[in-house]
Length: 272
Ligand SMILES: NC(=O)c1ccc[n+]([C@@H]2O[C@H](COP(=O)([O-])OP(=O)(O)OC[C@H]3O[C@@H](n4cnc5c(N)ncnc54)[C@H](OP(=O)(O)O)[C@@H]3O)[C@@H](O)[C@H]2O)c1
Image 1 (tube, rainbow, N blue to C red):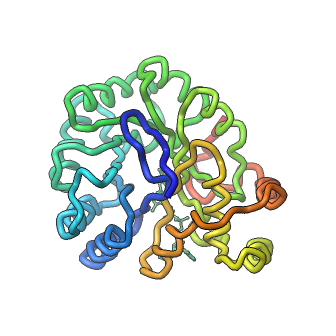
Image 2: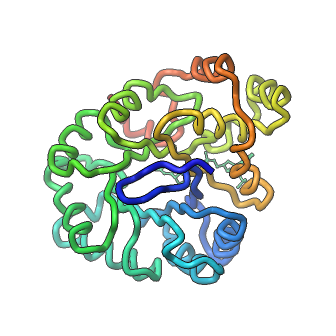
Image 3: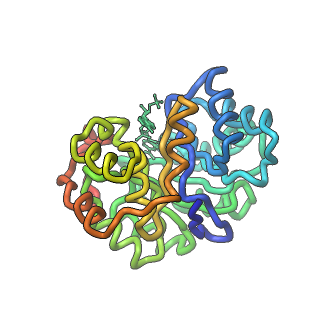
């Protein structure tokens, strides 16, 4: 495993995405993931599965302290009367007294960034989270956020070989911000790609492993692939015993397409 420093924490660069994992089946999937070594789990108020994530951690043989737990506050709770209350509800569902990282899930459509970053700081200062971060923020939004909270550690954004995040990623590296890659497998849509298949044959690896390995060879990137299948959960962790040669990394770098995203395109979101 590769580890990335986020504030006071050394965080496994491969974590578990949990979007769409709900219900009792989800508890078993997440618990199984912990059993095979996942120690970084990503959830959100939106996913309606904080209960399941908390229960899976309780059911596992691993203590809460050994898991880097992330949740996100949905924009409808970016209000002074609702923010802290919603975080406390999240913690209750997660069956813990703090998360390790709390993110603003998505910038608010009408409120200014400077109006709600103070809520994030208050949550950290009150001990409800150890670290703070944001998600789906573009460069101007990050600039404002960092002015108010210079200790923001991460921006979680869509990142995979088909999307061009080069400008945002370079800016974030210059400002010591890690990037958590969501939808790292383009929601599974990359798996059938012929080019990935060819690279998979060359390295005797699956397409998912080639994509995740490509990310792991980059600086300050964490990835949170989601799977409901034990075999694929294991596969997504097993990307630390081979290396892509420079030419293949550059080849994959060249696949990126402008504004090709799986999430949020309907919002006309601009990212840099
Ligand atoms: N901050 C945000 O706004 C935001 C937005 C979207 C997602 N996220 C986070 O990022 C996580 C990951 O993104 P995602 O869930 O959108 O998509 P993803 O991880 O890119 O892809 C998940 C899909 O890929 C399949 N898959 C997983 N591993 C595979 C493998 N080794 N081989 C073949 N197929 C595989 C899964 O199917 P099986 O289950 O059948 O394996 C599933 O259909 C989410 O779960 C969530 O935690 C955050």
